[in-house]
Amino acid sequence: MAEVTTERIRALRERTGAGMMDVKRALEQAGGNEEEAIRILREKGLAQAAKRATRKALEGVIETVVLPERGRAAIIELNCETDFVARTGDFRALARALAEHAAFVGDEVDPRDPSAHADPRGESSVARVDAFLDRPLTGKPGLTARELLTETAARLGEHVRLRRFVTFVAGARMVETYVHGDGRIGVLLEAEVSPQEAADRAEVRAMVRDLAMQVAAFRAEYVDRSQVPEAVKAREREIYRTAALNEGKPERVVDRIVEGRLEKFYQEVCLLDQPYMRDGSVSVSRHLQQASGALGVKVGLRRFARFERAEQLASDDQQE
Figure 1 (cartoon, rainbow, N blue to C red):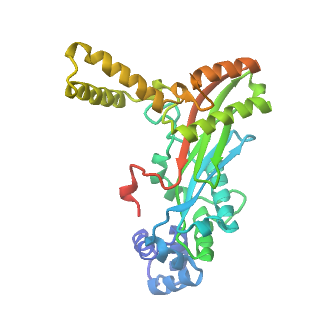
Figure 2: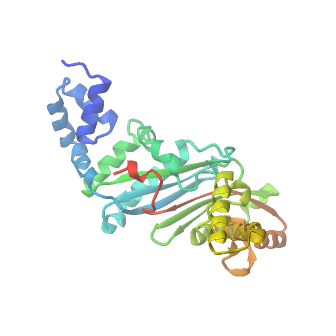
């Protein structure tokens, strides 16, 4: 019997695309014989799904889950090849199971890290997805998330992949969600409500959910300007300065022009600075102040995650 080493598991995984534990078990069952292990994987439908991994998976859904009793929430993007499969019960059930898995066991980006500002597009999760999929599913001993995904992909006959996820460990804070129509866009929005018990009031939840819809519609990138990294501010200032000089503006007024254009930049990318979608004459910050005051509560928006299906990510050049 040939030794089942980490190197052999990795090599066979690259050949088949099957999960690490699936490959390890197949090799052990086959006594270390790689071709026999491939046969075992194919018989289980695991290698067949892997062969489709070179096909583009650009359809799918954004799914969100909130577990208030655990103070955790998650958002995922699950992709497949066709819109037809994306609408099937099997695919939707898989999306729900993986979102729940992310809410139960997913690690979150440290919200205290200002450079992360809650990882709103799930960029950091791309490198974490592989390890996340190899974790056992909650309530289903002996079954990993990868095995569930691979088995479902085999039934559906398409390449299916979990592209990214974000997990919030919110504790007692409120998390509201908004998913647009067919699952093309999804948002998690976390808020601090005072008094805390007011977070259970339907009208307070509706107000925060409305702002989650604002994030979806207006593509905010930060909650407020304090979250905008200094490097981004410096980049924008340099762009505006160069543009103003190229336009022939006098040097003495360039600084004022730059700050004016930076203010408009904040109004585009910062949620609290954006015009409120239902009344463009007021900012989201002003609307929140008025609406929460009328309800007798204080609401502070803490962070959000916004996913749009198949949107370009910085890490896409490392993906399929």
